[in-house]
Each structure stands twice: as C-alpha cells, then as structure tokens.
Image 1 (cartoon, rainbow, N blue to C red):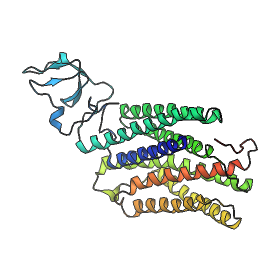
Image 2 (tube, rainbow, N blue to C red; image 1 turned 45 degrees about the vertical axis):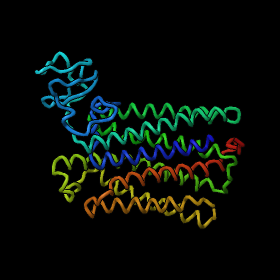
Image 3 (cartoon, rainbow, N blue to C red; image 1 turned 120 degrees about the horizontal axis):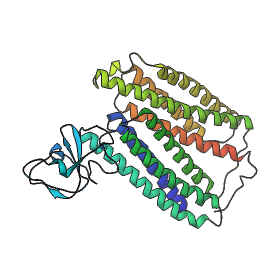
Image 4 (tube, rainbow, N blue to C red; image 1 turned 90 degrees about the horizontal axis):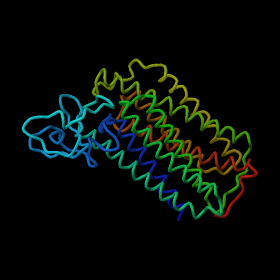
Length: 344
C-alpha cells in the first residue's frame, strides 16, 4: 500500500508541474492575486461583476473587490449601503496588481487545486510510511520530509504571487519541484521489495551523474530564457511571436549551447549502455526525451512558438530529470556497499 501511494504522490506532483507549465504558457501567474484564496474566495469568481462594489450587497470578511485599480479587502462581514464606505475596507498592500481575467484566474486556480491534491497524496503516503519504520527508518523520515518540502513549496508559490512573478523566485520554485521529485523517486526506488543489481563501471556512473547535473543547469537557464520571453511579450504583444526571440540575451545562447552538450553526453550514455550491455532500459527513454526536448526547443525558435510547445518543453524536461535521477540511483547502488537489498 505504501508504494502505491508513493506512485500516486509522484503522479500528483507531475500534474502540478503540467498545470504550472500551462500557467506559464498563458501568463496566468497573477490570475489569483492573493493566496491561498483567490480574490478572497475558495472558489474564484467567473465574472468581473463579482469583484465590483455594488449597493445592498453582502460581503464576508476577506472577500476582495477591484476599486479604482486597487484591491480592497472586506474588513468584516457587512452589507453595503448606497455609497462606498472606506471604513469597511482595507487596501491590499502585498502588491498593487489589480486585474481580473477569468481565464487566467481559473487556470491559476486549477494549478492551486492540483497543488492541494498533491499535498493530500503526499500526506497519506507519509502516514502509510509508519508501516515501514521497523524495516527502514529512512523511508519514514524521507516521507515526512516530503510533506515538509511540499509545504515549503506552497509557501514559495505564495511568495511568487506576492512578488508579482519575480524571476528568481520562479526559478527557486521550479528547482524545489525537482527536489520534491527526487525525494519521491528515491522513496519509490528504495522501497522496492528487491533491488536489482547492475554491473556498471564507475566511469559510466559518473557520466550519468554529469548528465543529470547538466539537465538541472539547463532547467535553471530555461527559466531565465522564459522570463526574457515574458518580457518580450509585454513589449511587442502576444501576436508578434516572431519577435519574441528576435534579439535574445546571453541566457538564450547558453541554453542553446547546453542543449548540444546534453545531446552528446546522453548519446554517449545510450551508446555505452548498448555496447557494454549494462541493461539500463530507461536509458532508451532518456535519449528519446532528449530528442523530444531538442525538437520542442527548435520548434519554438524556428517556427515561432507553435501551440503547446512551451509547456511541452518544460514537461519533457521534468520527465527527463525524473528518468535520469532514477537511473543514477540504479547505477549508484552498484558502488555503495552499504546500499544493500532490503525486504520491505
């Protein structure tokens, strides 16, 4: 039962990453300007009229309206009179973003909903981990570490909103998602009834680790390129896709150069795995994902960001990281005498 919930938690976290990718593609990051609610509601509004002041309307404490291009928060439960009274409202001061777009709001809301579901899945997984305490305290401790990390990730998500999508905070938010994936993948691997032994050279193992580190660096560079694209969208408009990378910055060239290195390193891993019969079947999937990642990157640059190419690029990168990390665990076990097979 424990491993089943590890898999459910892992799928849930990937769904959050997919939803987050859609948020980035559509520019919906500020669709809900407050946190954890959305305009002060557990279920967000569907029409701007719900966020406008109206006479003889009841408001609950914490509900939000847009008034004179500012966010106003109800200070208490009350019913409005015929005129607006500032005494019933507090100015929202965490930022000054006061725009409503129904599509952005609901895309961001779905992203948060997936985040809540992933938190529930990880919590249930952690509760089931107590059954593993006698066999491996490591499993229980890391399971509860996952709960803490997901809570920290939620807090990071709030700071991203409060900062009005600060680039550095978006980058940290993405890296933390990879850390959570790594912990869950480790739990999935280590909780197997029997760990398979692979006969792999130390040189090949080091190359696997190097490839994983390259992917992490590439993801970080990718978030910077994405920020540059967002800035260009604000300048030239959403329809002028051909101009988004017309004059790219240094991060773009670094990102593109790294993609060549990543392709060559993973080609070498695929070749030597086949040549020496290491039996790492997931290497084939890793190389396939590298090709897909390169293809989506080429499509964005040369074909002006085809539909869904941006979220696919991010989703493939996260899948690539997951497969690479799991294979590193398989190879690393071979060179760790204390990493013994356990029956759990």
